[in-house]
Image (cartoon, rainbow, N blue to C red; front, side):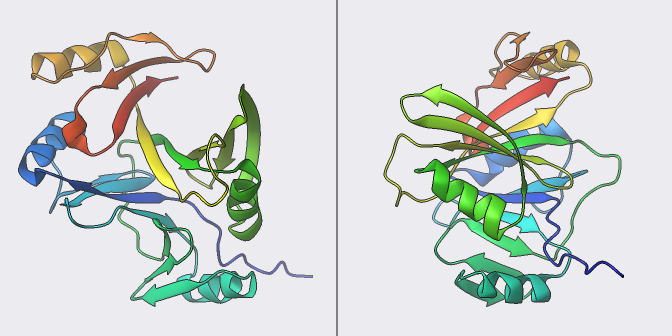
Length: 226
């Protein structure tokens, strides 16, 4: 019996970040990631783009078949606002599903994207249940706060859940980029004039990280070597 293909099959993550100064943000992203195209920097498993500060943040999850995925999610009780090749999850802004690509084979890798949700059960029901993303790890941080790690086919969504109202919306806390040589990269960025922390041991065993302290980037930014 042939398996029925999953129209969701979520893989890449595409972020559009509203920023106060697009020119300065673009300059910094060029230094961090290399030259972008039309204020978008493509990775091997997603992308980051810039928008004016009065535009909304969007977190796009790429699906295998946006039309079939939209129909499936409606059957699962989600309200969607459909546009060309994009459907916004109306009750879970800034999440959207998209059929558009934009990845660069062999390019820079997004290690993980950090989101916030007011309630862990609500996060599991949405990401693990309705969207079908694999929940790989739950870590209790105490005081009603948990870290939930969901793995798409190409990236990790880290969801910090709890500590707020169950009706709180979804927020973006930050993005982590993979680095092959974090010591050399930290030195390169500091020499280019960016405010970057010293390299330190990461929370995950065997990792080293540093923080890029540039609010102009539109979100907290981490470099990680595994």
